[in-house]
Image 1 (tube, rainbow, N blue to C red):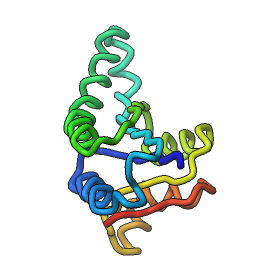
Image 2: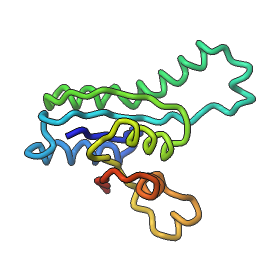
Image 3: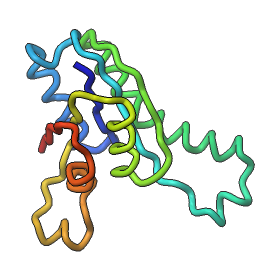
Length: 140
């Protein structure tokens, strides 16, 4: 099974990793994992004054801070994964990756905000569920 796991380095990502470890009977090494992290884009006016290499370095550094402990986790548990960094709104980047990669499952950590909070602020998980046909596993 091809699994796309959205990660952001938050406690909810850690819960998702704990879930993978606790359910290695069906989420074990026999699956193909892709971990995706969406880095928020630098505002266009700021990006215009930065060199492309500097901007790319910033995005790479942001992603590496998230991916480094996850790589350690996956290595410790004998799981192979590819790591993908996208720049832009998280929900859009996750949805696009899921559609293009033809994944069987999306795994997302969810903050578990109430309905009122989602109406006001929106939720990455809610947007992904609304815009993608791929089955999703939300972990809270």
